Length: 228
Image (cartoon, rainbow, N blue to C red):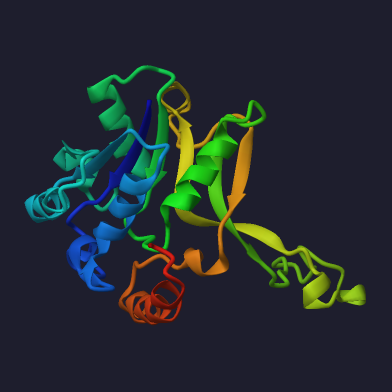
């Protein structure tokens, strides 16, 4: 059994009700729900929300895998963590300990079913206990003490020869129910990094992100049919 868990509270301060704000012609949350619905590896989608409009919007898409978890006020505050609502659901639903839990973020609309399925395939490898999605960045980073963090400044590499580093893009996290309950964290044990395209690093948290995201949608999603 594999569950896609999508937290979406209604209390965003930077962009009110951003999870159902129009993006690319649909409410923002539509894109990640669609990706989970079309994923061959996902059996059930759990939308965890505290807001009736988000609940109604999600259910209105008629996705066959979708169920709703009504999160408590305590897990929907500004201070509440994603782990808090995830643990709340697992303690309430009591799934089989070996259930695979795929945490997906509604603010990552460029996630597609292929990404979910490929990350799930990686998670079934006996090498990893958890998997997270990342993007490769080729920036030269420095420490506060004026020393380079990830390259030799005396032998500056060409960008095309620079391996770069992996950065979390916040889109996908995979673990089992038992591991999450034991560690109280979305990731634990030996962790594998699943690499996604660079543009998927954009999370829609601020109004400026929305402007950039809509432009990316026009140039990448529509022209390359990434969600088709």
